[in-house]
Image (cartoon, rainbow, N blue to C red; front, side, top):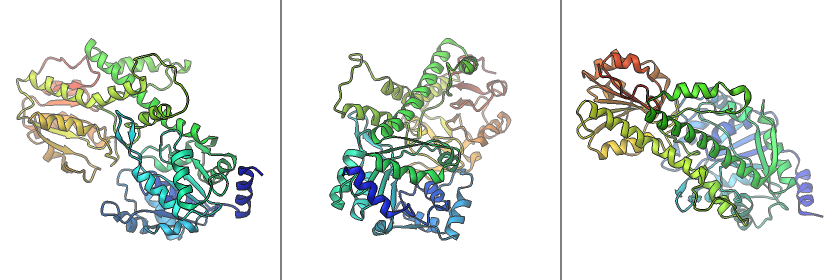
Length: 478
């Protein structure tokens, strides 16, 4: 009997998946747990959250049906309330309860401690895997949802689980990778409607993981593959998105240098859609933030570097993926350069200027402030001797930075207003209102997200600079 046959038999005897555990109560774990709990295929869902100083507060909130995620998340709070009231979902700090479950998913962050040497920080993930291994029982399914270096499921994860449990993966328990594919602001919708990539370390594991995810999909379908192919799929889809953003960011920088409007060029390129040549031309902006795009390229690079195969690639040439990262990481610095150039136009310098940053979250209408481009931009200003105030309607707090909710207070007396996030509220701002608050004859507005109409602001005496707006960046000052 092969290993997969043995495991298949164990799973068959165990019967269908009824009880599920979700480790990591964040942007991925919370909506996933709520959707599992809402399915009539499953009996009970446990969310596991450490009772730590920084995030222990989530346990009580979740058990009251309240979401700790504070951006706009359509339907999440209502669904949480429903599954908690029905007694189908509970959050607990007691990891020993893993032993009661049929399946466990892990949605734990996997940042990079040092991108240059391709060193990831897997400490939180390995802690989570270790906790699962301690309480793992025969016939259980373990699924990693975190984005990981290709090869991790069948090496590092397998090793820890086997060590801690004394069981063998693919023989005594099932192991798979089913990467999350969610965007903040549409978490529930994404989990239900996006196709789900599912890769087990063997056939029986893949089949069991397909059984776990099928009930929560509405429009999405399951795409089964091997664990390593699933790992590459996830890292590559984010790497490609980063590459597409870098391409339009570089084009924006070119358009500025050539004195033209990148948005005209973009509309022109995009009009060829039907031919399938430019299916996804994205938008330029003040930088790429968040947990995923800023590090998944390095997971992909590390996957190929640590694999057994040989890579045939042009010698002494940067990986285009890593180069794309460098371009996107440069955009906050470019915002700083635009700010400096604008100040020079009114005989001012960064030192002694007051700058109002609008938007700290990396994505519009969300409270997600992981690796925000606003941070390097602010650091450059502070190091240059500027006084900087930050406004964000959604982000409650951030280590070492005061986030102010009162827009008037932030903009009052500002020499520069820099738009770093496209929160919908910022689109409603008008030059008259802002001019009154700054009290300046010529206030600088640096638009990193194409939020304001340059002409309206310029005619009101503003000094305008915008990413990709070579047609406007040297306008006559009114």
